[in-house]
Image 1 (cartoon, rainbow, N blue to C red):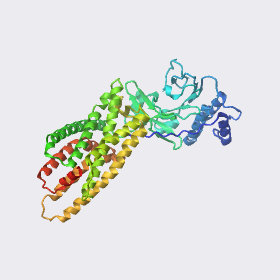
Image 2 (cartoon, rainbow, N blue to C red):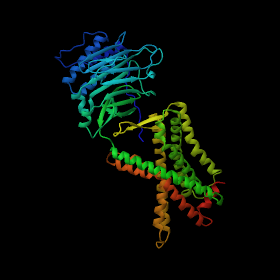
Image 3 (cartoon, one colour):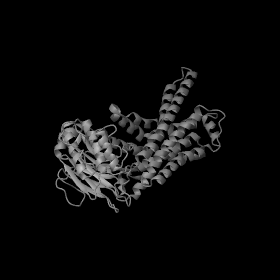
Image 4 (cartoon, one colour):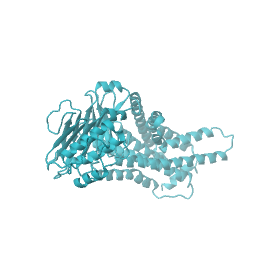
Length: 535
């Protein structure tokens, strides 16, 4: 599962006349000496001035290096936003195509179609369309009369070296306004023809935006849908800036993606089955008296059952036309994942009490308090998120499939910031804490081992099984995802999927061993110590 954080890199907008003075003083779009282009005669930010600056930038594509062009494009964008006009206007200068739309009070959205020869926001069909853009109604509030700027720049000789599809970038902006975090995303589509596919067969399209501060492309806030049968790529982004479709090498191959999907499906199904068996066995033996540690394990098992129950059908539910079932699955999936993380943290806390603070520990209604934290804390997070943004639980688009050309969708949390904080952030804290508890456990086992006689048989084997079981209960294997990068990406993902999809099966084995040891234990063991805490 990937998490994204949307960054807002937009510069501060300025009044049109002040902006024009700034450009003149800094020589913003000036050419080298001896150039035949000069825009110093234009004293206002109007259409003629905008056309002149576009001609300057167009000429720079022929003579200047890429870094100089990038700076000029950034300033050209601000110039276009501040262009004064009374009606919608289009400007075409060779490789640059601009469309400045004058929004009205009742803005209901906007569709723009463009080619190298023509651009329009009317319903007219544009021949040989290279870019289609849909801007949502959410972009402008009622009674806002801002202008919307569309700018398409095509330069295969300059942008092609960056891996940009057809050397084409698309800029979108609203005058005097920063736009980010859109719920109804901006969509734009570009063609991806067979010759390109044949020449770059080992790559796939990726929708990304350009950050003028770092001069780099980023995926944050954008999703990619490759409609292979239609020969086009659809990009959906929740902010406005300059965008492009890059042809990139996939992080993992299509065959690996398919194998990992099968491993996850089979592993989670097996875990779900054995977790249910664990609950049934626990229920049938409940009257014989159970250790409080076992009750903690059972709560973790219930959380994992909920997680698998809502994770397995998530993709199928997302494909339904109705949004109601998807919202339900998204909420319960997020809740059960948080509950799983919380109960693994409780496992670590309980282990701390058993191993470190063994004596003179009495907590009134210990299990009840643990349950309030284990089930209540995730509920509070989900409720707060729903109050802040009620539409954040919805369909989420994952990586596009290279074979069938469609994106993979599931029901989950769509807000990237909330996703990062409540999943990666929370688990990061739990992982560090439980990793410390695992280290304490191993140290304790080593100290106990030195106290035993060297002739005791099977001690090392039992200690190894204990460490492996505790590692599973503490959710340490989830931390493999933090180390799955670079050359370790593919093997790390295989290890992550195998170990974590089978976590329920491993807990079942631990439960069986635990019950066997408990039945054979004598009075005065740790079992009785923990039972006194539940009083």
